[in-house]
Image (tube, rainbow, N blue to C red; front, side, top):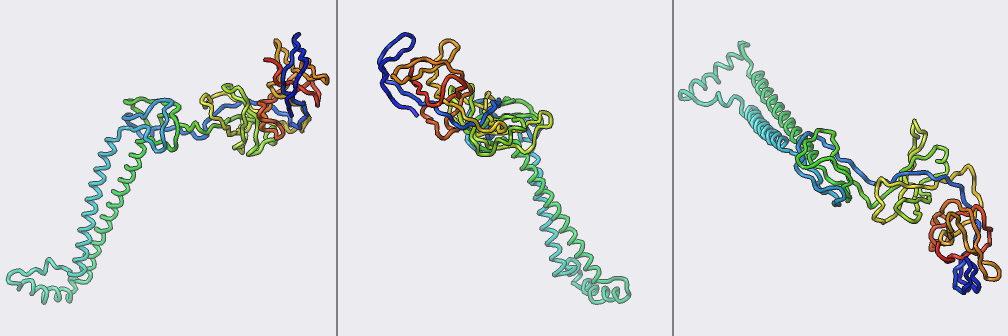
Length: 376
C-alpha cells in the first residue's frame, strides 16, 4: 500500500527540502522459503535434421538466424540415383501389368473356347474335323488321354501365370513406394514456423546417413529446463507459477511449471523440470543462463517483510531506505535484504511497483518508507 504525501523536512545527507513523495507501508506476507537453482533457456519446439541417405547437398535454404514458415524445404540432397531407380521400377510395373493382362486374356479364352487354336480349319477342315469326331473321343475311350483333365491343367497353368504376374505387379508397386519414401528423405522440411539455430553443412558437402544437417527451433515459445533435487519436487505441480530471472533481463519474470519428468537421473538423483516463460525480449534466446526460485516445503510458510526494490538506496555496499517518521521527516535506515520476489506470484502485491525484495532486518511491519527518496 502506498500513497502520495508532502514531506516538509526531508532530512537526508544534510539537505532539508519540501518534496512530494510516494510512501509504502511495510507489511508481512506469508511466503514459502525457496531455493534458487540454475537452469538453461531452451526452445519449446526444436528439431534436429539428420541425413537419412547418402548424397551430396544440393540446396541449403539459409544460415543461422534465418526465419522460415512451416512446410518450407530447408535442405535437398542429390536424388538422381533414386530417380533412376524409380524409372526402372515403373518399367517393371508396366511389364508386370502387361503380363497380367495377357495371362488374364489367355485364361478367359481357354475358359470360353478351349483349344480354339487347334480347332482352326486346315486341309479343307477335314483333318481337324476328323480329330474332333474320331481321334480324341477314341483316345479318351482307350484311356490314352482325358480332355477334361487336359483342359483343367491348361486353365490351372494360365491361373498360375495370372498369380505370378499379379505378384510381380505388387512387388514393382512396393518398390516404387519405397523409392518415393526415400525421395522424401532427400528433403528436410520445416514442421513449424521457426529459425535455423545451427547448421553443420554447406552446399556441395557429401553426407552419410546419420550426419546432422541443421537444427531448427521455434523461438516464439521458450522454456527453462532445470534439474531439481528429488526432495524439492513435492513442492511443485504443473501450472504452478515461480519467480525466475535471466541474465539479459533487468527484472524478474514468471515461469510456469509445464512438465515434471516421471523419473530421476540415475547418477545425479535429480528430476528434470520444464517451465514455460512468456517474454518478447529479442535478446532472450536458447542456451542462456536462468535462475528459478523453487519452494522449500520442508520449512513451511513464514511471515516475511517485502518492500519494492525501487525504495532501496545504496551508499557504497550498504543498502538502506528512507523511513518516514511521525513528524513527516525522513531518516535513512540500513537494512539487510534477502531474495528478490516477483510480485506476480503473490496476489496482494502491487505489480506496478516492479520487483520486491525480502527484508531480513532493519524494518518492522507498519513502517512507512519513501519510494522516490533520491537515486540509488
